[in-house]
Image 1 (cartoon, rainbow, N blue to C red):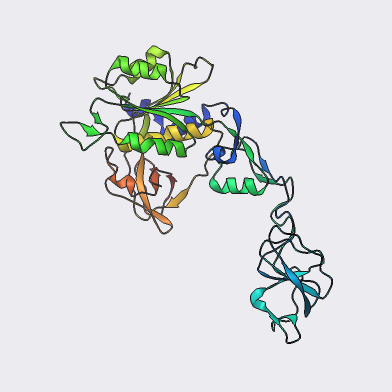
Image 2 (image 1 turned 180 degrees about the vertical axis):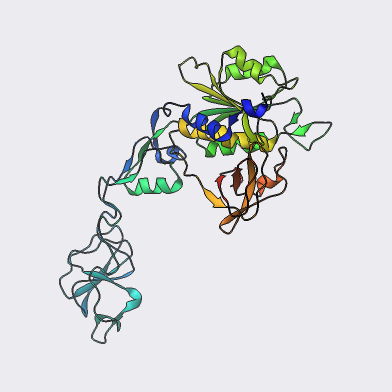
Length: 399
């Protein structure tokens, strides 16, 4: 049996990573700032009408009835009181200020003029339509209206909407805790490559990407090629998901399979028919002492292969644990032919060219130069695709 025959297909591996979690992590209630990046555990509904009252959309005058209008003293400001307007009168008003009772419209400052007799009129533009430049109460939503479904990611824009709708706190799913174990005695954590050793590129690359996928990264450790050290690091980790880089193949110091076998882990994915990233894996670890479900995502050590493994296994798993909605697949046509592997799916760094994508150079398994210029990873089926073919484009850390 060939490696290809015994490997999980790329699409199936991604589905397993997404579906191996029966339910999202428990809900917590956080203040607005603390909820950023979490997924809503409950639908977001409006606690008030938006706007909460009729208000002016422009600086100018609130007017009552048809003009010309007698100008009343004073000005209505945002947050201030508004005295009722009798028919045929007007009062200066600021943007966002409450519309006085009796007002029928707002005359913009640049469209109004005062006559010699001190009356306000609509400058050469005929009658002012009722409701002109007024933001009516409830224009955006009414109290109780659904704003966002459960599972929506709390972005800065969502925080603004929640605050506008009256929220001080949000009920969200707990973010999965992730610990990153970067494996390999050959890795340096500072300075340029030297003396046969290489710089760790994944330690800086992966944590912000994992955080952007909904994780709370609780640690990052370099672990030398030693069975005992790796065993202890996996056993002692308090994370919901342990992410490792390297040691997924069958080399003389690749101990990850041994450690997982000793721990009684359940292999859910053990190699994937994809390039780069073939020797990636996903395993269910024994439960934590408090009963929490734990997983391990094993990424290959080569940087672009690890990126492929993150996109395939880690991101879907973390999003499901965190309660996030499934991302809508992004499909774009190819500007040129995209080369493929004869038998495997290929994840290829690509760049947007208008409404198409094109391949980038420096796409080898150990390279990151192409990825750094990319807008995503194109999912290229075995054999490649001709120009004009629609392909799925996965988000990549560079995007």
